[in-house]
Image (cartoon, rainbow, N blue to C red; front, side, top):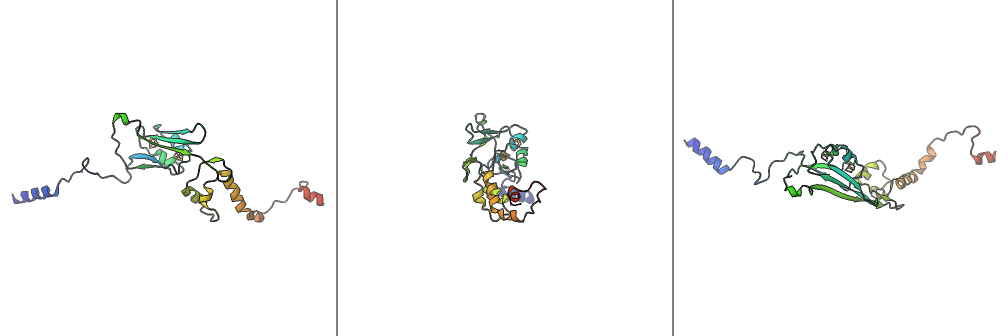
Length: 193
Ligand code: SF4
Ligand code: SF4
């Protein structure tokens, strides 16, 4: 009898040992797939996520005046397969463990992840361009300390290529030149002959 009373007292003082949810937070596994999120600083609008989405839960709409695009993820259509995260080349998609998806019927169309991303003028030629994320620019130019990633990420691809060529023009002198074929000598060489 005394051992029973001991157990009873221990349990009463210790409180419930079951999960406290919904009156308190519950355990969340680290890799739980709860909700898709998009990082607008990394997204390049390539459409890989949309094309790989089995549920048709992603939409990418270009701005009518070509000023950018809007990416939308419909949370109620998403089946959390993680295909978008796998195929996104910019690592702009993630799935966070926020699993609190209960909602009223009238809120079903507002459960979206949406970002509008605008082009910016290239800092050299002014052409509308999607600014590279600083992380991506650092990755691209990690082997070239002469390039400032913060500067080049605001440039269009053509201007970046020209800047690269100008920065490395000295290597042209060490590239072996092919001997000219007979009869195809440069005009100035022919003039001297
Ligand atoms: S989220 Fe990723 S895959 Fe989708 S459009 Fe943006 S960069 Fe492309
Ligand atoms: S997790 Fe799967 S279903 Fe959900 S948006 Fe990504 S690709 Fe589509």
